Image 1 (cartoon, rainbow, N blue to C red):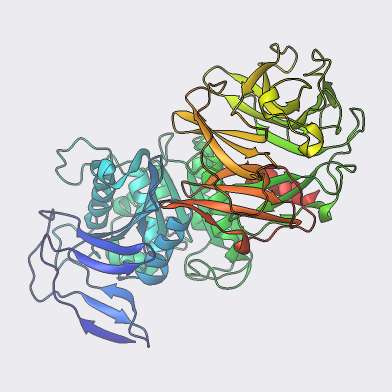
Image 2: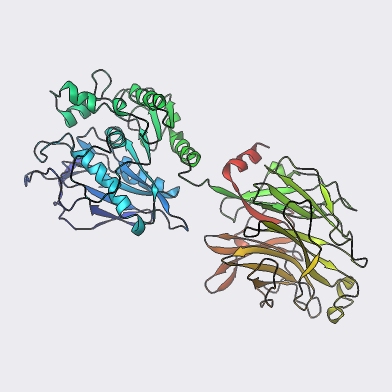
Length: 597
């Protein structure tokens, strides 16, 4: 191990360090460090590995926060102060600092690595409280700068490893202790704490002697030992806590976590503990053994406690062949690579309609938490199919909705879709139909005389429905409309079905209200190939539109860009034989149920 001298950090200096998201700022924590003793001979040093990477630091006298902001989002991000371990004698700033921050960023949490002062009588008037002062100020700094850093002030947590776990549990139980003069009025209480193989107790036989001696000294009083044995300080206001420990930890006995957990349980504080069979001490993010599962367990805990929003998976509902066997589902985590579920077997067999088909299945999640599906039941029927489900596995009894039965000359009801209006708390179901004799100005002998327009009905409960009305007449034969919320209004993706002169392409129209009126259709957004059956979703803030290149017997996609629409079909992977359907998001927990199916 190589040690090098490091130039003292001057107040106000910003040190830029390369990180996963570009750059991480290292910021001084204090303008005036409380209880500091000036000592020019006490110089911070760095520990380097064989590649010259800084893995640890010693003799920290000027505390800093290194800022790793999560990718920007529409909502404010949770944040975590990261406390590396090192027995209060050094800080493991790589394994238990930067890498942890990057992992937190990857799950949508902004991270702030705290380089806290290592207790020493050479630089502190009271070394017992120096690290706690830094941890309290770190939490307050996040709240003070929440607007600038886009942080949710109700989701400011702390994570600590080993001795850093002791510091994290200390600020979680001693956040109200007045250890310096704070005049800002911001709370130092973490909203949650995550303790990884933590030192909790200073008591003989269970403590980590190195941490105890560094923080309290070899001749610490019983009163001081009791005070900083943090299981003794737990009360009903202690933050919800996740504990991670390995049973075979020989440096910090697992009883540290167990006793803290029991104290949390006694005080009815929400708590969860994962004790792994192996891993020893200092496994960080884990590189072997059962302990490698802890980051996943941690993410689940954060979701369960509503600190993180549960991740979504994209699902695609589709049919194969003529729709005889029913509903098929595929999934994707990036919107490009799609894989069928259930070995591409049907999840639901069609039972209603003239031909008992299940073509063009459209699924949305409604305001009632149910998944609602409509589909085409026949080439020549006057109604559509409907069913609902809580989990996409068990479905309600299928219903036939005779939405065009009032029109004797109706030839068909094709490609129904459904959109939920959150403002009016109602659903709009819409589809394409040809009514013989209607719209003679666009009637031709092409396409067997079909001359479609888009019609709709609304419902709040799927028991009563409004009278069917015309939704969209763009002045041409139109089918396959798909409507989604877009900002304050709605966007409709549609197919121009005109065959002479040939169009057979996708266009868009817009409206302030779900039920219209909709604007004039745009210029084509797809190429010279024939396209139909659009379904769209926003990925990274841009529309991705999937569609059937039905003359080529392929599925394609276009992506919205700042310059227009880009064909990304060559980047897509779809199940063989996929036909017209819909794309939507589901929570990962529901997806895992589908995987089991």
